[in-house]
Image 1 (tube, helix red, strand yellow):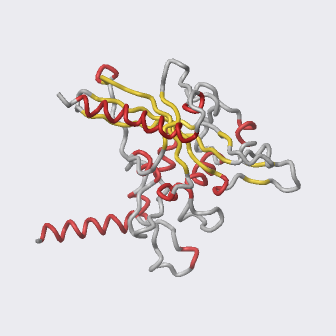
Image 2 (tube, one colour):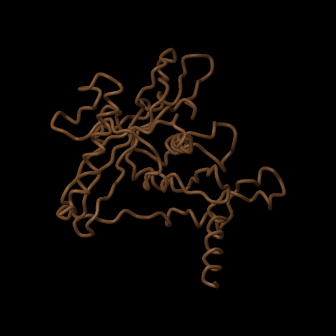
Image 3 (cartoon, helix red, strand yellow):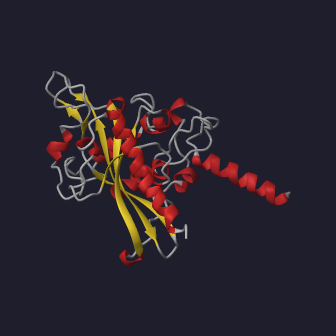
Length: 275
């Protein structure tokens, strides 16, 4: 019974440290959401789980997979909300977190959206034009509500040392309004970001939990643990990693093909230990 009580205390204690609170102790409204020293330490850069070293010879199977996270789906709303301007710092959308990190210089490497291999970088003038439109009397910024989805590149691999399949997120690309042509209603790919560059920034920002204000995870934890829904739009292949829509025209059949590719990955792990 005592052990159970200690576990409960530890669980709720962690929840308090993980929340952006200070609501009960604030003397002024602007103190709400300001992290205490303990909270800052709990989510400091030193705390996020480092990727383990994986030797190439220990990888017995791998597959590069490209997915799209649709922010209109309810399960993905923690990545989409809140709207810009509602909160100063205690709650941010993932786009606002990424945008501020890039504009402040915390993230320096911005890669061409047409090259998912991270070999071609954008210069500052090029990617800043994707953040805002300056053709009118007032600059029009790219807001959180203008981001419709995120494309991600990752690798599924089987590590023979531990005998299991694992996933490693490699890159992420926001998709949203075309700021160079505001009359274009179709979303465009903005730029690729190397995920390891983003991890320290995303680890510092907590995600709002709609079920419990006192218990949250960071954006990094949400993404690395795959707490989102997505569809596969491409997988590495001999045709220069062509996407599904290049060889399947019908939108419904594209979803079917996406599910088939998911089954290829899932079935490999099951078949690996079937015998």
